[in-house]
Length: 190
Image (cartoon, rainbow, N blue to C red):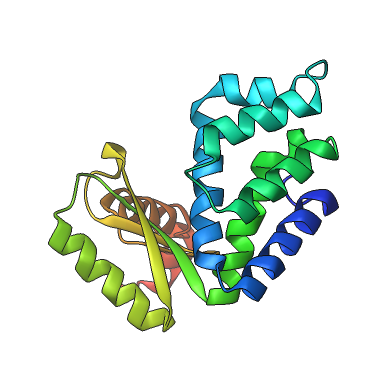
């Protein structure tokens, strides 16, 4: 459902409008805000998707919530989505818009997973290294997972670099499992 034609069509239309008006960065921030609200405040999502509530009432709710917080074009597209009874697609339209924006602007998303919280300096240095490798702007999310023991995992798009202690132990374990001891005995002569 994330990449359904409905979601992509609305997201592309909004992106094209934003590019035409030279406000795509501002609209992206709006989409992130709307997405955050829909994820954090279940009441807003329920209210917008309520089948009995009239469209005019939903428009009023959107205006009251977002009027001074988002660009008027964002508010207009949100009202259009509601008018066309596509409220249940709103989260995914926002996600698709953000994806389209990043792709068009050449922005990569990196996920850095470590066993403990890194300092701001370490994060900045790792981010700069990733940007140099991919020759692109990088937005980096950090996650702490103690089960890594030490080291780190870096994932950029569909590429992953496992420099964790847990990952190295697993590699060693796999190597030991693949050793053919019978074959080794024949080759060793005393």
